[in-house]
Amino acid sequence: MKRRVIQALPALVIVLLLAGCVYSPKIIEINSLTPSSQLAEETPPLDSGAPDESPSPSPPPGGDTMVERLLPSAGYVRIGAPAESFQSFLRNYPLKPSGSPVLLHDGSERADAGAAAVLKVNLGQKNHEGPAGAVLRLVSEYLFEQSRFSRISFTLGAQFDFSFDTWAEGKILQVDGNSIKWVSGGNSSSGRENFTQYLQMLFRYVSIDTLKKDMSLIADGEISPIEVGDIFLGTDASGKPICVMVADLASAGAGGGRIMLLMEGGLPAQEAHIVQNPVDSALSPWYACENTGKLQTPGAEIDLGQRYRLKALS
Image (tube, rainbow, N blue to C red; front, side, top):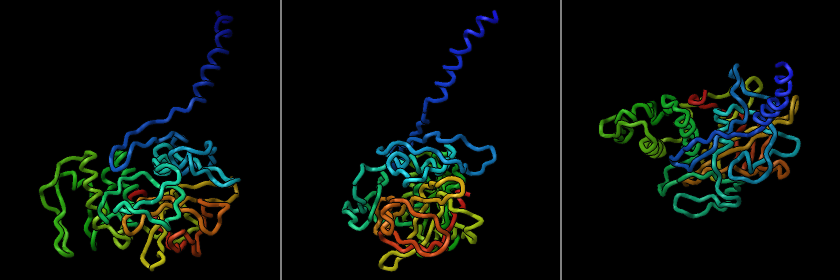
């Protein structure tokens, strides 16, 4: 009997090894404002809840998502992320074909976007989704996919709490000048169609000023390093406020530096996109992670000291 068990062990070991080497992505249908996305199980969730600092190898070039197409610069590898994290959600967000222009809400092209990749979003024909809306779309879609509905709540006006939970109870907004209040007349549903309608209303009234009310300023960058989802504020060439969001991170290893991808929307309403690095072509589209000073994107100057973290992602 012992001899038969020993003879069976090599075959069992081979089966287990093969099972551990097969990549089996978890497919999650989005079917909302965007096409389906694939949430890959890059690194299992950590028991401590802390971000995984161990580098994960980069896949071969090409593909329809950030993790497939936008490879880190030489010497860097992507930082590992739990499969259910916002970082993994963004890495696997669908992109338009390589070389696609950034389109405005009216279908025209933004010639000066300097986009390294354009996200596949259904922008719509109304000039509503500005810089703040582009950020909150992605955060809200992520939270909705995770069924964390109570976290989908943002400030409109001076202090009005526009929550998806209340919207899903069948309430809608009544806006009269600077006055906003809930009234009956909506759909009692937490389904995807009603969520889409919630986002369309959010885009109409959210701004960078109201976005600030839902974020915390990172006062000490040395203590709190840059994370995916962090938002930098700045101004575009005409002096209008703009915001960019950290969309991914890579590292040179223990003791090495970090680099990041940046995503932005804009005014007029336009497709969200990953921006190129106009200052360092060798690093582009990645940027060095810095905590102070100024950073230049193709269309804006960013104040690195003005880094915020959304409360919804805390």
